Amino acid sequence: MTTTTGAATSRRLRDLSESVTLAITAKAKALRAQGEDVIGFGAGEPDFPTPAHIVAAAQAACADPVNHRYSPAAGLPALRRAIAAKTARDSGLDVDPAEVLVANGGKHALANVFQALVDPGDEVLLPAPYWVSYPEQIRLSEGVVVALPTDAASGFRVSVDQLEAARTPRTKVLVFVSPSNPTGAVYPPEEVEAIGRWAADAGIWVVTDEIYEHLVYGDATHVSLPVVAPQARDRCVVVNGVAKTYAMTGWRVGWSIAPVPVTQAMTRLQSHTTSNVAGVTQAAALAALEGPLDEVARMRTTYDRRRRVTHERLSSIEGVTCPLPEGAFYAFPSFEGVLGRTIGGRAVRTSLELCDALLEAARVALVPGEAFGAPGHARLSYALGDEDLVRGLDRLAEALSPA
Image (cartoon, rainbow, N blue to C red):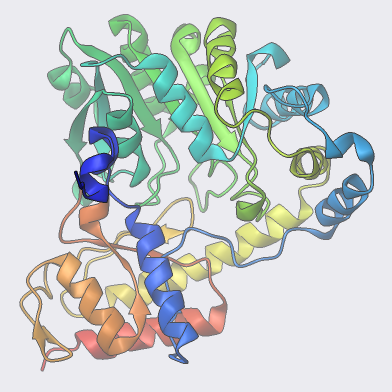
């Protein structure tokens, strides 16, 4: 008897979508490998090297035999203490190290959380536009994604009224993200407090992703939901990591902060999946958290300049509207006004078709809004060198000019 590979895989994996951001990045890299000059706005990855003191700590850790062996599944005790201290320092949330679980990046931490909290049929409220992996991870946990659309008029922020209208007896979790990937939206403190109070009153868990906490600009401020809404603390899980703040995407160190019983459950899960994070990268993360924030401030200043350039240039293109991002390192313009035009000889009707045409004709890689639950838009990361940023925006403007 013969069978196809697809039929042999589980239903869960057959239904799982590929990460569009990684797929776009891979296609752009493949074109570069063929000698093409491709400018990639796709990946959410700092273009800076990891700060030197962090690299030095990792190099020293490589020579220490203690890092050649297994460590506790929940993370090195010293790193868990450092995460607790860093959280108190940066957001004002008092954390017991026993609440901390060190994972292989923020994405892994989130996967652990959804596995721990979501039972089959549980509904998870997910404001849209959303990061591409949230709905897939929720579905892998056999939860039901309840997407709540937002738009530029609302600042891409969900309201308490929307949340309450979507709540049912099956609602278990709210995913809350500020600053946001993909929109760059940052919730004002009073809105964060109101959402936290609503969740507490409703008895709903909140998973708050704070990976971009240090990347806010202008008058925007980041506040941690369990700090401004302490009544939600007992049903709140904070997810964070070193990737964006310290330019350490490839080091793969993230963490979750949750009530001790939840952390213990996730530790049991992790002990049967990935076990511990590599000792060398934990040592690097420890150096990052205990070291100075000077390089972080320098990177933030650079991103701030780039976001203003990106906003200005995109806003000057006829048919494109682009809110000024307040955080992270993404712009999320609407391309509704250019759909229907011909790009590289192709009439494009959707943002998915538009991004494909722009990659082929202009050698510019963007991520289509369909991946984020927001058709008609596209995400551009401005975490790339200044010269490439300007060249890429020039190419976009030329490709999108009306015939």
